[in-house]
Length: 326
Image: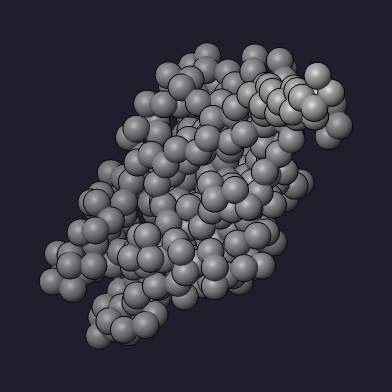
């Protein structure tokens, strides 16, 4: 019998390890379908960043599906617009912010208004009476651009009777609309802005993130990571570990750009150089929630009320996770 003892012990050990692995909790995460977020999550999705207590199942969703999943509580953590949190909480959805999802860059680029290189529009005042293409008037990103125009440049950004004619259209349609004169200016998304800096067909009229930095010292937060109050209270350690993993995954991407940006670039047919620009110049996916983020969100909500983009908002403390170790 002794001859079989090591085998029995090994088998028992394997079963024990298998049971321990199976006992890991799963944290499900729905995020915006965007190559930049895929780059930040790559190390988790490819087993470079792991945990002894949880596994993360990340799902990329387009905005309509992400909104539906958030309302349906289909995931443990959701990436959602900062503007969506007050509306959801006031409707009774127990969303709680656990971290900043998208924070504008310290460089101040990434939220520009673009015009054709030969445009007669040279200043913000020249935008008056013109058509500005935007991807979604209800989004945090466009709300922030409207706030910047109103607060720092004195533009009436009312949707009816204001100084600018805001034209909603899908992002893929914007470059053609701008080139053909269907609109006079556009809020190009990051991939389009990166291309514009390369080919020179469009030029930035104003960098609104820079305007916020110059006037408030804040990097704006357009998207947040949020969980649901009852789940957060039930197992806060899982959510702390989730944030740790996302932070480590982002750090891995920045420390290994050739590996990560190359792989994601091949998968999504994106120039790897774009990711370097995105993380260093346009935006960030920090998964942290520092004091400036709290201040930036309150600024967003208060100024959104001022321009009529939001009716009201609950106190910040009612919309944020308050773990005991914070």
